[in-house]
Length: 219
Image 1 (spheres, helix red, strand yellow):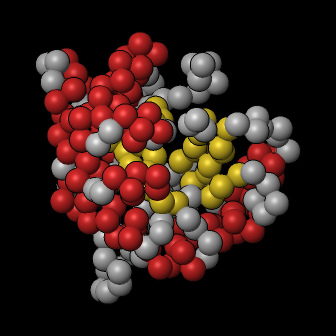
Image 2 (spheres, rainbow, N blue to C red):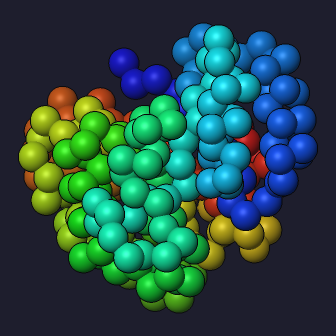
């Protein structure tokens, strides 16, 4: 049975004091046992966050990781660096990385393969832009994104993968996909996985929705 996941990406927000305060507040909450809670603070505070969530059900994950093991890549963070401080999962493919850092499918596949081969689980993000949905091309766009990346992987690696469908037009815009739109896409994603692998793989993978989620619409 798939476990429910609630993940918060804090992006380039919250300094040390805010990060500490937010985590302490989260630790006071009584989360359902069948829900996995994940937070993704900024890089400088990952180790602090890990220490703070000790003995709680909250998991700290990374917002990104580089596609090379090491080297002259100023400002980047490697898989080994993340693992060395206790990080076991990272986001890959967030739309803001795709747009602002020009990360294409080739780069993302490199990241995915390096992370998984070093026991760093991933939450793989993908989704269409508004013009692609309005032109009724959103299903093909999503299929292409998956076929060029995670659907190239061996089946046994899918136990280390969570998918996050995040329509770009709904990220930070105040616009939100309707439950029907999100569910329709999730069903399509499972169909793509089924066609590439098998029913078990398709049914077992967790698929998240991301895009302008707030208490009033998180049903």
